[in-house]
Image (cartoon, rainbow, N blue to C red; front, side, top):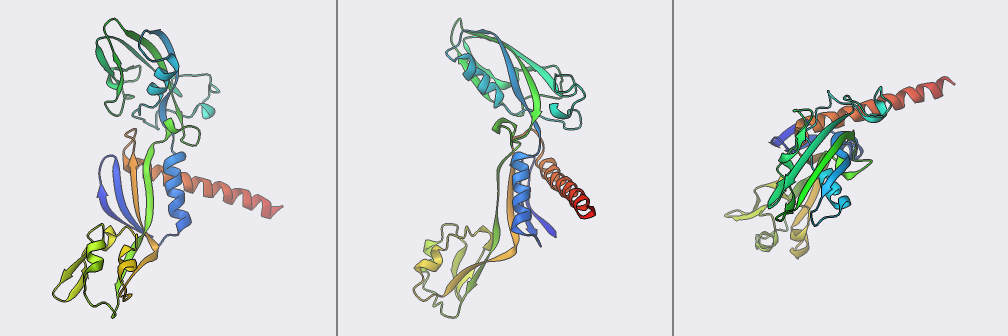
Length: 264
């Protein structure tokens, strides 16, 4: 299996995975979306709220704020020694007090752990003159499998690497070039040429408009262009590595169970 990096940033990555199957690539995608834990506000004490939002709406907005997560410092409540009752190993407290007129942003949350802070500047609510909110929130680890607020991976997807074949029937009329929405095809002195094959969206508009059947859009069955984006709670490289580790751990657990069954 080979990995070729196309684009790599702090929160977004695009890479080609070769020598893999659909099942494996989809497992990576699903693990990034639903199995890698992250911190999110799970409980809110609202001491004062004279804003235009109901308490439930305000709590929902706080719950959807991505928080920077250090998975080496916290454990899932179900795996904590406290039994999920709540301690410094499985949860962190955040507070916020604000009075209008102003726009309240996520960065105004004060965390008991300086390492846990909002991953981005998110507007929470606009307070008018005399309006006030005062809350204490508890953030816990969870997975996207349980709720979308714990979904560390967003916009995670993949497609087979495109392969565009120009056949002898092509007369270079250029209709396919005009119809291509990604600018993958161009007209040259020698006819039609492919300039950026990987940019092809596999829409096959070029095939449909070619009356001579001079072009064919295929794919490499074991090569995939993968796109992944983090919500900011952790670097995208950590998200991808932890998703792969999760698959490995599940495979090892399955292998152990199968060994027990075979022994019986």
